[in-house]
Image (cartoon, rainbow, N blue to C red; front, side, top):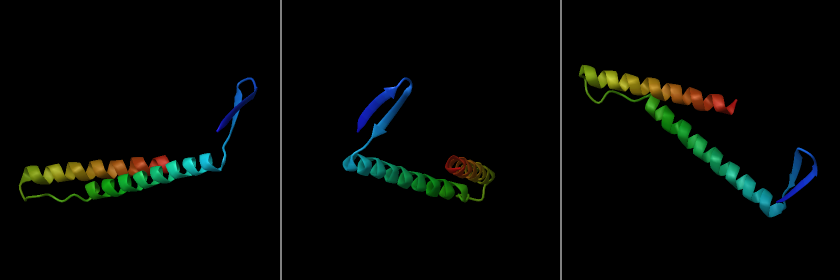
Length: 79
């Protein structure tokens, strides 16, 4: 990568083929991590109660709400 500061306040960068491959690889890894995060949030969003007692049901509901909020938050970052 080279840094070309030809004008005050504006820099331009250029990449060689290896640099572009590295940047593309980093974005692909980020996309994979994001997909995994959404998948994990979906699992949380459908968590079932481990038992039929009140506390278990309440905890599961809280987990589901948190999972749904996390999915929505992650999706909003895509937009």
